Amino acid sequence: MLDRLAALLDLQTLSPAIAAIAIAALLIAAIIRGYSGFGFSMLAVSGLSLVLPPATAIPIVFVLEVAASIHMLPGVWRQVDWRSLSPLILGTLVATPFGVHLLASLPEMPIRLAIAVLVATTTVLLWRGFALERMPGTAATFATGTAVGLLNGSLGIGGPPVVLFYLSSPAGTAAVRASLVAFFLATDTYALALGATQGLVTTGTFLAALALLPVLLIGIAIGSRGYIRTEPATFRKAVLVLLLLLSIAGAIRALA
Image (cartoon, rainbow, N blue to C red):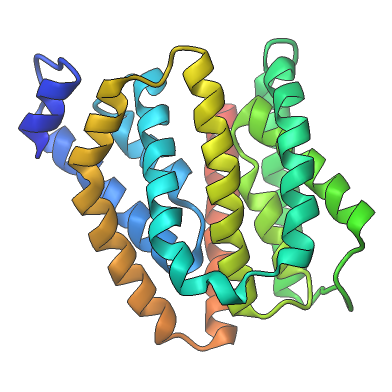
């Protein structure tokens, strides 16, 4: 697999140890995606960036994200909360191009740090029992989507706010996980299309993703099996821990 990936992307030298770490990171990311419905991109990009330039790694991860969502969606389709998801996705799609524009004009480090602190603070509040009594209305949900689109377009970190939105709602864990799968299918497909317009997505991108597909499917199968065996309260705590770790990683990245 590693030799095939190296050949597809014209990598002349590839340390077996570094390549193994990258594949292991991708497998772990896929397991987490299968379990929680999110978290794949950040971990997978970190792993693949060990062997590939970010401009090459990120489009590959987007293709794998879309493949993961397509693979998982049939099994969770009936649990998706479409009433909240529709305005959330619409707001995200509308605001993402503006976020891409902001990327060129705003300093990255303080924004990343502020978002990491915000995610960590909100996660702690959720851990201590904060919750909404009812789902936000259409306008509030659309506004949340626009905020997510701005963050995703400018910094590529729109995922945690969406997770926090659903975890703070009265939606059950099955609806949370299913809605996240559907959300990322829509938004990642959109981001992939935007990347294609910038020349970042090539035939090699899809071939490399195809070479890594077995790792993705194995990881999702393991993670999904773990979710089936998990009690709702345990699932919620596990997702909150993951969010906290991602926020810490985001803060470290901002300060590095």
